[in-house]
Image (tube, rainbow, N blue to C red):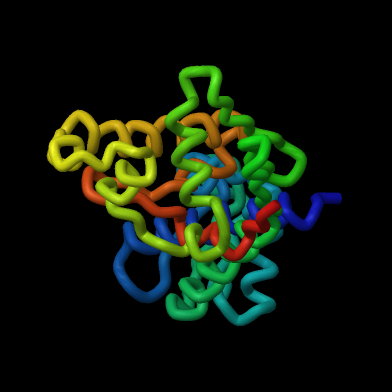
Length: 217
């Protein structure tokens, strides 16, 4: 039996596949097959049929017709979707998937923990600027909820000379640190979190999607 988290991920895959397929067709009823859902979002046939039946019981979709012998050898459906309900469920499921994460940051050891995965940003490696960035943005709840200008980050790093704040290379250092930290987090969480930091050449912040899941030590 699937764990709660895997169930939610599967459900989200089906919902997003349905949404994508719906937007490729005219309004009203439309035809899909479990083959098409697998081709689009990698949703297994048994999973797509199972979740489509669940969504029908929830009043989100109406199965107008069901064809057990589609030309692709999979199950075909003619569906009518309540788009408003579908969009609401997609957002709710996204939030639940994210809410299953337990994110903790230890400022003493520069360790970001996502569930049981520990991601260490050491000061003695190429990740030192990333450790500095985490130390500032993950200091406490206030820092985590703030959108920081790249100039403010440079000042916190001690690069507060007026020339430093105008130096594009220095400003780029903040951007690159956040981007590489995102890459490291994505790599060590098997892409479960790919956008922990939202970044630009002007500012950086922690993605609001994850803020409420973070605890501090």
